[in-house]
Length: 39
Image (tube, rainbow, N blue to C red):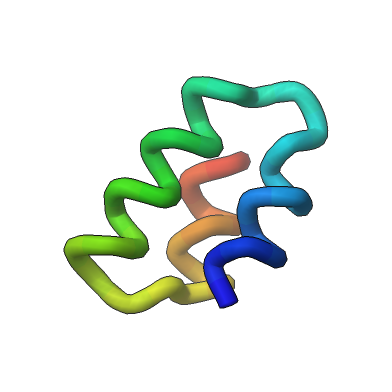
C-alpha cells in the first residue's frame, strides 16, 4: 500500500517521500496525515 503513496509523493519531494515511508513503517499510513504534512 505504501508503494502507491510513494509514487504520489514522488511528485518532486524525495526527502518527503523517504520521511513518509519511515512514518509509514512506524505508524499506519493516513491520507489526512500525508496531506497535512505535504501542505
